[in-house]
Image (cartoon, rainbow over all chains, first blue to last red; front, side, top):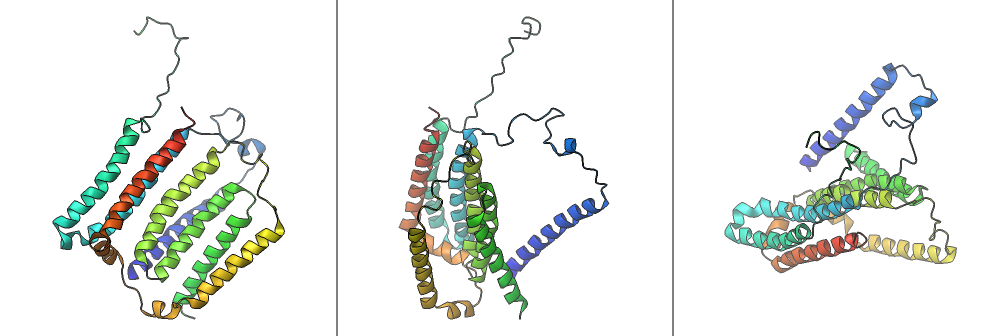
Length: 132
Length: 165
C-alpha cells in the first residue's frame, strides 16, 4: 500500500500547486469586470450561436476504438509482471490474444474508420493560373 | 482516530457526495463531470480492499475511457436540454419499490460479507497473481476475452457508423 501513498501524495501536491497558483493570481490580479470581457472569445468577433456545437462523429468512433485497446493494455500489465517467470509460453499466449484483436484493428482500418475526412477548401474565388 | 481512518472517511464522503451529485444534478454535463469524482473514489476504495490492479484498471478504463465516451455522448446529442425528460417522475410507487428492493439487497450483502478478515489480512499486491492465473489456470477465458473485445469493437463501430452511410 506504500506505493499508493505516493500516488496520494502526488494527488495532493498537484491539487495544492494548481489551487495555490490560481489563488495567487486571483489575489494579485486587478479585477475590472465589464460585459465585453465576459463574452466568449472568438478572435475579436461577436460570438454567433451557441457554444454547444455538435462535433464530428469521428471523434466518437476513434474514442470507441481507443477504449477497446485500453482494456487490452490493462491485460498486458499482469502479463508483463510475470513474463520473466513464464517464458515462451506467456509470449505465445499473449501473441494469440493480440492477433485476435489485430483482426478488429484491421477491420476498422480497411473500413476507413481511421481515415480523417480531409476538408476540401473551395478555392473558386481565387484566380486560377497564377500559382498553378 | 488514525490518519488512515480519516483518509477513508474523506474518500467515502467524496464518493457518496459526488454520486449524489450525479443523481440529483439538473444538468447532464454536471452529472458527467461529477462521475469523474465518483470513479476516482471507487478506485481509492479498491486500494483499501487490497485490490491494487482493480484500482488501476478503474482509473485507466473508467476514468480514462468510459467517462470520455459519456462526455462525448452528452456533447454530441443535439439539443439535449430542449428534449423533455421522459423518465422523470414516472411513478413514485414503482421507483420507491425499486429503491427499497435494491437497498434491501445491498444491506443483505453487507450483513453477509466477511469484511473484517479481508481487511485484517492487510495489503498484498495482486498483479503478479492475476498474471500467473490468466496465463495458466484461466487461459481459455483469457483468450475468449480477446474474442469478446473483438466482437465489442466491430459491433460498436458498426452501430456508431450506421448513420454516416
